[in-house]
Image (cartoon, rainbow, N blue to C red; front, top):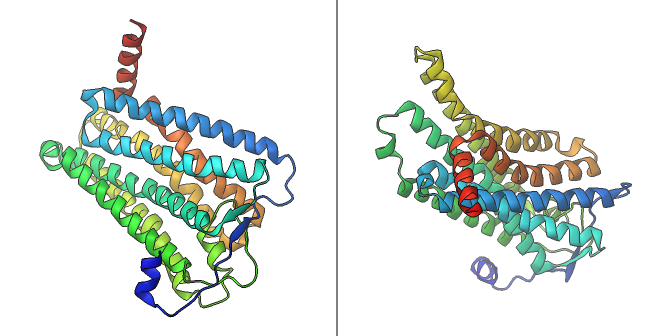
Length: 316
């Protein structure tokens, strides 16, 4: 971040506080039960995503483009849960409300790149399903492990650069008044609104990033399924349509779980009470990483078969 600031101006000084205070869940009763729930969700997320990654890694039959994307989704879910939940529990369960300035910027960066990669990874999976259904004869030549890895690597590079810029712009803000962040983690919006100098670049970033990492990916996914629906409508056999659509059910379930609550929260925005927004946002952040591996295990025949084979080998 020093390089970022030096590139924009050498003789400008900014007022950075030693720490921020996370306000979290204000005045809500029985919050300790909620923290126990978050801990349970975190344990299930770690076990589920680790299991999915292990199955894909151990079974060579799953070394396909689709499962390369599923592996990355499980990795992102594991990283997101590990970056967010332990810190939230430590902050509010043990009353460690203070977080240093540098730790807060780092916390924000890692949380947001994981949240953004979830959406972009769903785009990669929708691309895989689109090509598999629309071009079944050419699927293996058009969609390869190398092309899927390249697409995922591009998405990682994009979100890293995007949030390096976002955090870099935050470091050019001065905080002369309050240092209390009205959120349960180092949230971008509540932080830049505390600034006492010009925060317009951060405001523009806060408008552009949801478009690029939420609305644009969702539009691509919806368009891909319109194309899939149009292609399936030309298939004469109802059984063939059902079989082809069944390969999309896991992905569609994950898309719904991720996008629907996120869009509702962002659409309501300031109309929501602070506590309602914080609770909703925290649930929208931790529930998808817990449910995604369960959905793929229950709705994907290949993973279920692989898990049974691995379990049988372990029994022997």
